[in-house]
Image (cartoon, rainbow, N blue to C red; front, side, top):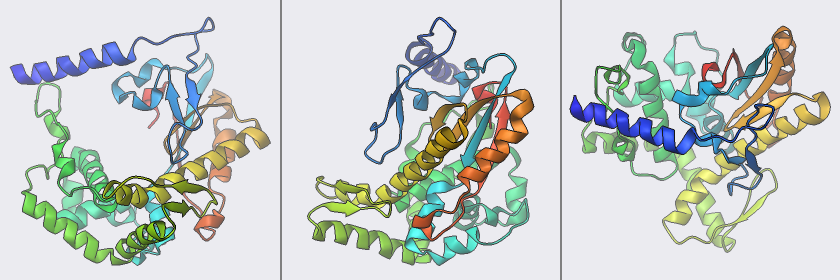
Amino acid sequence: PALHALFHRSRLSTIDTRYLEVEVDDDERVRPTIKLYGAKTGRLAYADPALQQWPPEIRHILRPRAGCVFLAADYGQLEARISAYLSGDPIDLAVFNQTWAPNDPHGDIHARNACALFGYDIKAWADLNINHTATRNFAKTWRFGVGYGGAPDSVQMKIYCPCTQWGCAEKLPPMLDLKRHEIALAARRWEIEHKVYVEWREQLVRDVLKNNGWYESPWGYKRLFLQPMPGLRNEVYNNPMQHGAAQIINRAMVELHEQHQAPMVLVMHDELMLEVPEGDVDHWSSVVTEVMQRPVPELGGASLPVNVSVGEDWGSVK
């Protein structure tokens, strides 16, 4: 119990010193600096404060003006969808192009991955109850780690608190006790199942080396990779998905601003957030969904689904 308390105390101290000293303007608004080229992939980044780093525990302190709510529109499984369409991976494409029952984990690429990797069927998945999110997030992180060239067991190096006093134990992924050889076997199974994707990413590296480090994305942007191996390989693996996600979200952001004068307040990863009057939620939900789900020419005209949610503060927007 003492160690658990120290863990939480350390986390709270970090939150207090790193995130809660926020500069607020005279109108009680928080206006961070936006770095248009904050990442090599083209994703936006924030500073003063660095909102993309804020943990969920403190996001509720940011609230809309009186009479308004936050409306967030989030692309579902965006990077996984981009990788499926660019690589032509038939396994992932089959998941994305079918209609699934609401509780069927095979309709969610990351839930499906958790089931495939760790032997869950639909009933076993349902029996996980509150561990759904933790298990799915574990499988999601694991998939991207393996897919982008990371070590299969690196996700197990993340620190989890096992205490029961604050409910942390209930949020632990149930597969943390897997042995290293089991994780390695799972990675091998995944690579065999997704051999089309694996060959596609290896061809990307060969093309970059052939072109003296240059890569041109389907969106027409060029990037020069100068890192030595294996850093170059891992950067090349993830760049098409990270860059593609940035271009898709940025394109939607520009259209919403220029064509609809949408009251956007935040772009966070694969999500756009608006501050709208409570009575206009349906209108803006329809507008944002229409714009963000437009077919993407670079992905063969695929339309990417969007999830819309509403909250009275940033932390309540799910």
